[in-house]
Amino acid sequence: MGMRPASGEPNPQELLAALLQATSQLAQSASQQDQKLDRLSEKLEIFAEQVSRSASQQDQKLDRLSEKLEILTDQIGRLTEQGRMLDIRLDRVVVAAEMQAETAKVQAEMAKTQAENVAQLLAMLHGKSA
Image (cartoon, rainbow, N blue to C red; front, side, top):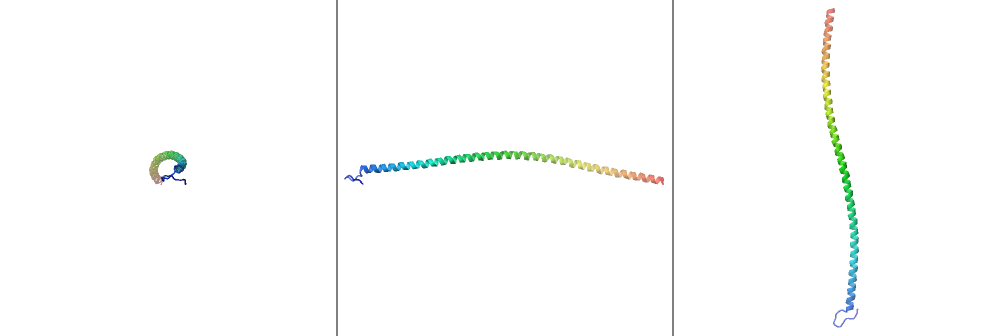
């Protein structure tokens, strides 16, 4: 170290050297902090872009799913209507079949009655001719 003045105060040159060294260290530390902040800022920008891209992709997926859901809802509505129409047609077929069965039953009874009448007539004719 340099010489101290007789009063015991530090040498001004030593103070200046210490001040310059401290200033240099502060400047270096500030520079390092700036570099760290720059790197963090870049990372944050990249992360923000990734989040934005991901959000956009999710929005697109949701839009596609919404469209598919709309299509499925329409298809279900059409199928439900077709099922209802089929039920109506089946009801009509059942009613028609029941009516035909009833008509066939009446016709069978009429045929039976006619057959009995013919049998009686034949019996009467055979009885007269004998």
